[in-house]
Length: 418
Image (cartoon, rainbow, N blue to C red; front, side):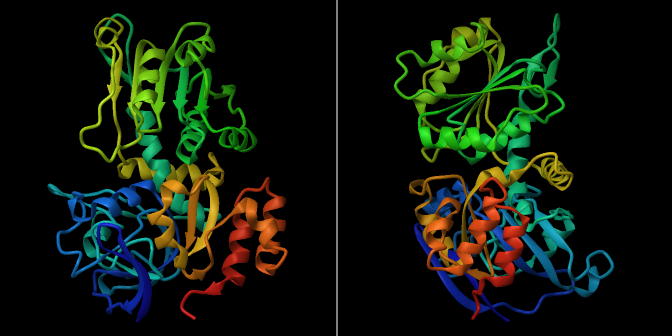
């Protein structure tokens, strides 16, 4: 069958093209990709190409399909899988997969399996490993955002603190503690904040910082205090002593948990300075430079039991928990999304991702649509009935992307294959 996809051929060499997809084998699944949310990790992979540990060496001849935050619907089931899977089943996917010592991922490792495509073939090893998860949520786009949510679940549950009077590690956020998310008004910071307020172990106070007032104001609109957690937003731009200001928000106690959302030495050093006794710092934002350094006070590491960790991605357990929290509406991942586009916009958006403001960019992979910010719908709606309708729908939903808007786009958007 004819399909369209964004494929990686080399460093900064992304191509949106049409090609023939073969028939599936007895242990494979043919799926229609519904949505894929663009990730900064894809931008980094595009820069590294085959230097990335998950990307093959021969992509110049056998290009891989980009995109790993996808949701799909099963179109055809291989003969050996009938009964276990059915046509019409919707699913989310686990991105990072382990096969012995080999680590693979859609969007990095496969020529026929990735999120930036109209249709894909799910490989036998992926199915056998249990890396596609049936999804029963109320909107397809939420299944796409389950993958980044799983990464945040991994980050929050990887934190640890010491039990009183012994060396036992208590995993998770400090119950009733102070938490800071630095550079946190972007999509992943907001997702982490909502998760933190809905975890079994949650802080009493959560401070989210940023240096962009527009991001701070949007964050205040879309994220509200939950479950008794005090929520504070702080624009730290121009603060002479940022660390003292932030510690002052805790009454001088310092923070028990600090999540670092930008690979910037100054942000890391602020995190180090605001950390309290038995604190845990998580460097969540992955740098592209392998010789990335920041100054850390190791006196506090030794005498104040300061823990420094880093997490990258989530495992299958995290993904299952993300899907559960989304299906039960425990969390609302729509706060992460600021832009909508069709598959035709995915390559350019990935190439320029750091320069595009806002949060998550959500791609509808069988739709032809320019990448458009939700807050631009009204202006575009003056000349385009589709955007007029989408603006009216989002206006009824606090200017957030939602199921009604998704349903309307899927019903009225232009087919990418036409």
